Length: 303
Image (cartoon, rainbow, N blue to C red; front, side, top):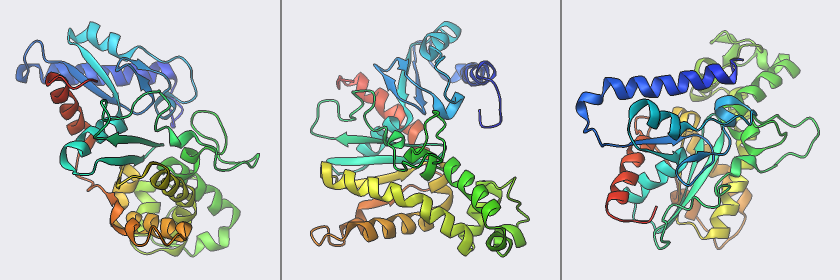
């Protein structure tokens, strides 16, 4: 979608890849083994996608993914929000009773886990955890979210938001950009800046320009997470997602610093320093979480 592909082509590729993978691994599976899909968007009833902005943009033509996969593979299909899948994973390895998982990738999303709630992962109503679509910038020229609305948290603090902000900043302040490692060492130009090739490597190398862009884009996320912690009495916040994990400890330090800067409340003390954690880039928490979800289903946990 970000590369200008049409929704029909995108969905054909997504579904085709899943079907190909099922076919290639069929010899490892039992005929009745189900498929569990961790999907990057709001879902309901483990069967229905409500929106897919980071996959196919603002299109309202959302495919019935479980039905198509069931028809093409002959297997039962469960559909999870991808952050919900991660929450199942952390519920299995963490001793915290109530925590939040937040993803910083192509968009921003979150899910709450409450060990004392019958459902454990709070998926309903469908907007639960959709913090990426809260308006944090009311200006008429605010960044445009993939869903088509301006000023959403996901449009600013996500990996895509940071990348787009960096391009705009480079165009508006060419002199500052010219002295950055993004330009001098990595040969980036305002038109083709990417997180993978320019912004993240420069930030990890200590470039002030790249770090400044990331910090300002992350500020509204820090405020949102602090509010969530205090409103819900969270014990932990686990950060996942391609952008956050690619920066690792550095991103965690930026986020913690901004949350402490925003807190200014003595009751919190130093709790934020240990409360927020980031996942190692090699951990496939969403995929593993799908397995945890399925094991809970077989043990009779209400899903």
